[in-house]
Structure formats: C-alpha cells, structure tokens
Image (cartoon, rainbow, N blue to C red; front, top):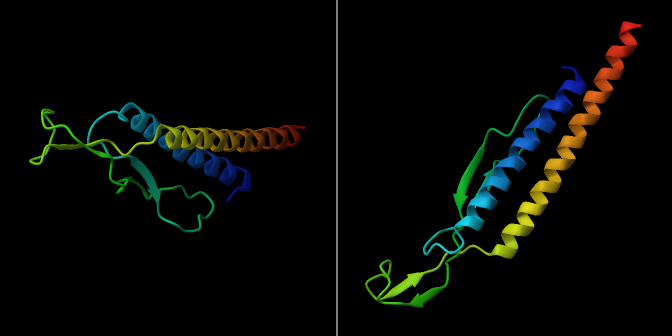
Length: 128
C-alpha cells in the first residue's frame, strides 16, 4: 500500500475519533445539570493498527462514578427515600478533555496536510 495514502487514512481516522470525543464532551457539558445523567466516555479496543485500518471498535460507555446525592423529597425525580442523584459530570474535566481532543484533532489534521503536500510534490515530480 502507498505509505502516503496510509498516513492520510490514519490521520482521517484519528480526526474521526477526536471529533467523536469532542461531541461526547459537548453532550456531557450540556447535561451537567441534569439529575441522574451519567457522563459518557468513548472507549476503544486496544491494539495495533495496520496500514489503512481505522478505529472500528469505538463504543460509548457510561462513567460508573456516582453523582452527588441530595435530600429533596419534593423533587419529581426523587427516589422513594426522597433523594435525587446529580449528574457525575465535572465541567473542569470535560473542558480539559475537549481541549485535549481538539489538540489531537489538529495534530492529525497537520499530519494529513503534510502527507497531502508530499503526495502533491511527488505528482509534480512525475509530471516533469
């Protein structure tokens, strides 16, 4: 397989993963005040990727950390004992995750652009 094409495909795959992470972080931030909401995480199967392969085994999982419980018996979502469970989303964590995913996305984009530039230079050389 063409190494430049493989590099471009891996960069695209990386951008897809980071885009998905940014989307989940945004969803978590928008539901931070929703009682009972559990933070969503992107889990990927570990393993070595070969040329032309992408992250196929991405799964959205729920964070098992419990949210803070408070006694509010009048709340419509209160359990039988009168407690509601807040979401387990930390805005600081989500913003840090979103920032890291954004930087990783940009790194993959730069890798893609460099491979594309090298590919174009190779084509220009072959045309001469």
